[in-house]
Image (tube, rainbow, N blue to C red; front, side, top):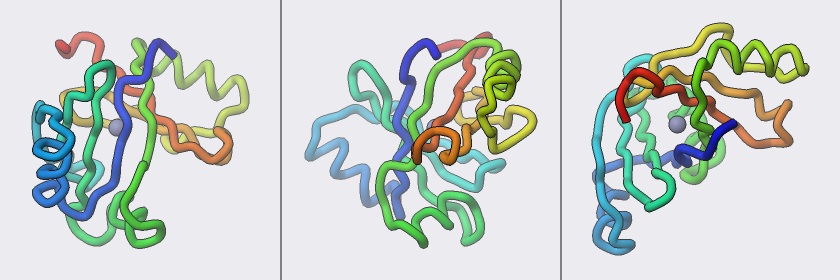
Length: 136
Ligand code: ZN
């Protein structure tokens, strides 16, 4: 793991919560995009040394929709920036870590992402986020 890239935060509405992050906390909005594969709309906010990733559910049956239904809004995951995500995934599997998917999925900003099962990570949902070769 090289560094924490971002913290993912589940929100019911990006439009509503952005006012708090931008106008109240004084942070800067970097980008908003939809990630169809994860049924979310995503806003990246510059928080200095890391980014905050606001995740708004698209529809009722995606992972973020389920998370909010079960636990309400709040911190959803912590993402480590990695390179060569397939090798990292293989290494972790060898060490007995359970991953939520076999293959990396397309994430926001052209990244490839994969998640570690919270059962393997003492209750924390960790994301591996590989932006190598995608700029940024
Ligand atoms: Zn993320």
